[in-house]
Image 1 (cartoon, rainbow, N blue to C red):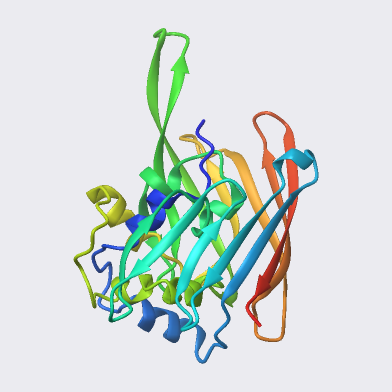
Image 2: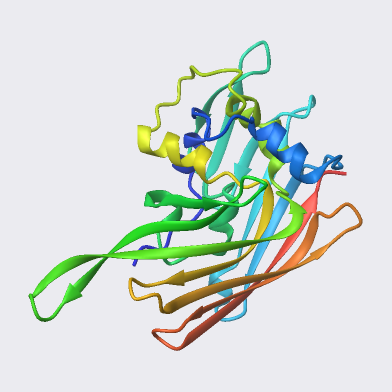
Length: 255
């Protein structure tokens, strides 16, 4: 199974998009969350309870006018460039950073190859269908199985929204600009809009073709007075392999 992480390719896919509803991302966000205090993420520390070598810190820097400048994961740096009108024109370099779903390091690629079957009233994807290749002993070949992911959300806003806005990405999602130097593949472009959540995901339940639960991810957040997460404990359980992994995250914001 693929173990995706934050990727600059997915972030680039946010740059061009199409509308999945009549409302823009900003309108959906405002309708779901009302007046939300604007905070920009400065770092996210990820601490494994099993292996310290898996620990990492994602650091974000901003320009003097508040635009997102760089994202660094300790190995690679993504650099955001803008034109004279402060419109995002490109993302250079590599980075493992800014997709909220990938914070959970899911073992499946549901959020890259799947399709949304159900949205909730706020426009969040709640049921996703995706496909897994499995070896079949009877036919001595690989067969394609249909899996689903059920996603639940806390009644709080997507904490990355204003950070994405500082990168010019929300403006693009709202349809203000459509032509940039970045060239993501068309399927990535479509997925970017379809999977954008306006609330904060807190649970993902994966089921196989028979409807059996095979993997769960639960995130228990601690929020500040403005409903921004300050920390979280994330627990991942593989029912098939009887394995459990936990790690903690610590969020910090620009003062």
